[in-house]
Image (cartoon, rainbow over all chains, first blue to last red):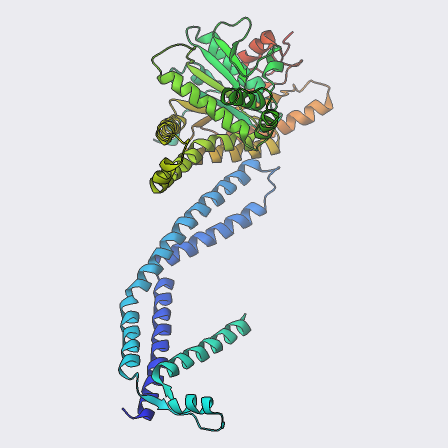
Length: 167
Length: 338
């Protein structure tokens, strides 16, 4: 494969890999979002919120029995929410694990590309500095592994900055 | 079963007093609500109504009151109450028990570290609960033992410390089980290493651990069996006491410990014609909380005890007072114990 074609192929592969990761994550989130488990947690949390509002409107000294009954209900809802959240997490894990095969295949393909084209240079750096060691490093060129590593580091950096700014 | 079929439990302690299988009765609640008076009264009623059985009342509260309640000195060894043939009392004392234990181990009386170690150990947080637990183990062993060297008690009543301590004590069997399981795991991994160390008798240690594990399992089983163990909550008709009792009941339910009796102490039952305005106001407040309790604990035995005209101290007064546990006080009746 021509270096420029390999460069384009490796770059496209990298972004497709990233995109597939995002798409599978999005699909998992979507499936979780519309699952019965999520719906149950949402209903329980809404119920707890309403109960707490009703409880806080009462004076425990003046309406002890009513207040205590609501307090018991909050305790019960807390334990039900714990159980429902565990079920939801199990659902998430189950859906995530169903995409594991696809992720492994892509990772394997990445390894294959790196090994198959290990000796092919995707481009060479311009020889600008007259220092022998720098010239030697420059002349040896940039391989697929290094290029994918550089891309990965760059995208991770951008992601990090975006997340920090978003927060 | 429809609501119409539901029978409100009797407002007395007859179900506990006439119970044949109960081995452990815990009496607990907020500080200052009359736990010691209630536990002493329950013990007296049990002893009077079942003369062929032996009862032991143990105080696990670090600030013991049993001696004061009965007006005679009790120590770390069970001693019969003067005037009662089948009721004994004891107060768990961490300092002297630890001194005894260290005396067994080290006979050198001149060792300056001995006293210091006893003082240090007795001040460890939770040591009272641990020693109470040891006492439970001792009695369980005694129940199972074929040799009847010591008196075997049919029922042991615990006058517990305020709520926090009591919950910690009741959690001990479960904590112990987890700890011993961890120890088993470690012994499996480092057993060889322990064996190669000089002076450590691993076999005897492992045997003791296995025995302790079995006893802890038995305690766990007994404490969660409503036919063997029950908890009596004591409170007064005031918000803080009721709130703490509710918390205690919920915690006990989560441990699987049976709780179906509440003693409400210090009730005024002021009559309408009583000129005392303060009594009327407090009685009104107490009646309000009693109404709320009737609604909340409809499936509990709610025993309402009057505020009497004197301090309930000494066997005679305790016996008189304890009658209200069996035959509930009728408002307007005498509260004179003298």
